[in-house]
Image (cartoon, rainbow, N blue to C red; front, side, top):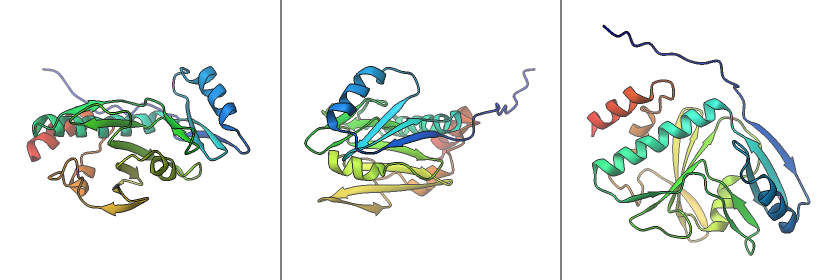
Length: 195
């Protein structure tokens, strides 16, 4: 008989970040070209401020289980989802750029994602919602301190909503109880059986 146990590896507990101010778009673009394929490194740019961000293992576990839950939900209710992962999105005119933790397009593939997932395990850094707002990403789901908050872009500002325009029957607060990064297979099974 196979024994299943929950293993929690020793993880670097904190995300690492460095903020630089007075960075031009050209400097950001050059750094992105140089460092863009470096595994685990993300660059976030907002109007002259650059954040160099290295997520912790815990950060990656949380974002992955969230992405899996959203993907499985979309499959279960037959919503076509096109995953972009953490592709770089940027607009020079808006002086903004970032790599989301996870993102996707709904129904058809588009130049920018419809839906992004962000995990905030620590404070500080660039306001990513301001970056998403300038890029025009319609919805951002944020995990912070064990809670999920869904932001919907209306006009030029985000507002907090309880239901997604793309996943209208998905209970966001119910979804939060299945974000169990150290028990992903069972979390997915439990979530699917709750639908």
